[in-house]
Length: 199
Image (cartoon, rainbow, N blue to C red; front, side, top):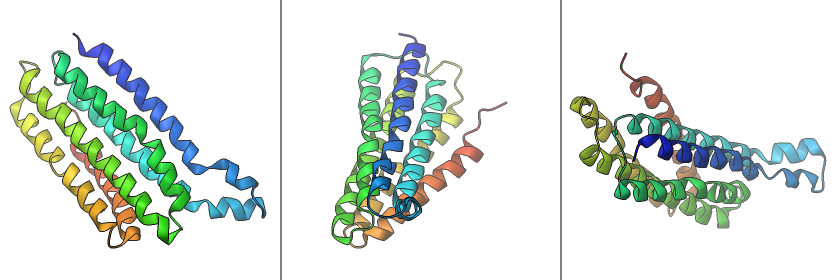
């Protein structure tokens, strides 16, 4: 099967996921007691959670496009791995909303950070699995293997880094949430500088 249909379906899932992320802001909370200005300022954790998750999913969409341009076709195992990845992507709005709702609550913040971290860790594992399988079974004949090795090296730290940030939540949930934001910023910068297609 050609990659075009898979990429089109994947783009649709990514688009829906990033659209649903706005629900993390919890607009209905602005109708609670107090002035609108106070309520909008009170929602700052939701704004941050939205931005971090949107950036993370956006980077994954860019990288998804980058890796599929190296594939000549897709087979059944790659389809199934991609479905698992998309399942994780579409789940992202839920932990984002949980973090947004409980980032200011010490007791619940840890559980929210762990949920978010586990989601990101499993997503990173699935993303690497898609690339790892595809790079060994469906590469285009003219693919530069140096570029393949570089992509593999750049994706290897993803899951362990998210797992570390998740483990930190058991000690300090605030530090864990800050780490998730830092990871998103790091991958945004690295993707901009090192993820360019060769001219």
